[in-house]
Image 1: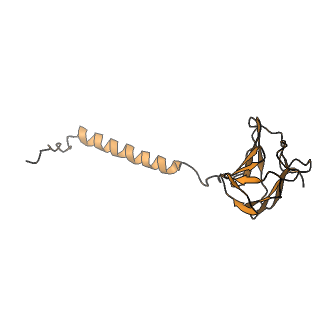
Image 2: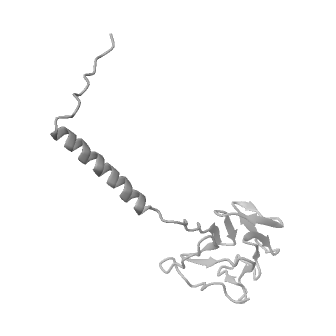
Image 3: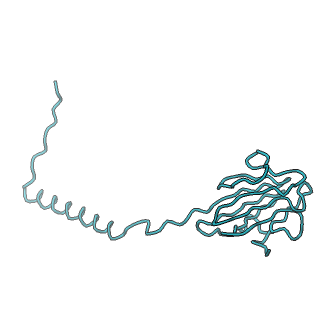
Length: 163
């Protein structure tokens, strides 16, 4: 399987995740990288040079774990690794679904699964509506100003306190 991203990418060279796509934030030692997940497919972690995401520590097995993605839903499977795989601090036994924010520990590596937020559709500000509201406010202010100049302004009510 071809590499899904450059494993040497660092935090100061972030990959921009596609809107709504899941991605992994991987921390190994003093470096970090981001890897987009496919909508369908699998991503294998391990020390093996053929691993999709290569783990650089000796606590990881050659084929440590696999994330399988089907229709955008991800699950992680430990591949009978020597030191095991933990999800949110609990040791993984079999397969488990992954959600955005889950923290996976593979040997000394830490992987955080995230789902990029989809971009909002439509404009943030409706300019024609704002222009219309501004025109109405200006018209009211001009009308109030004209009526005050003509002496048609009603006297202000005096507030009285209830006994």
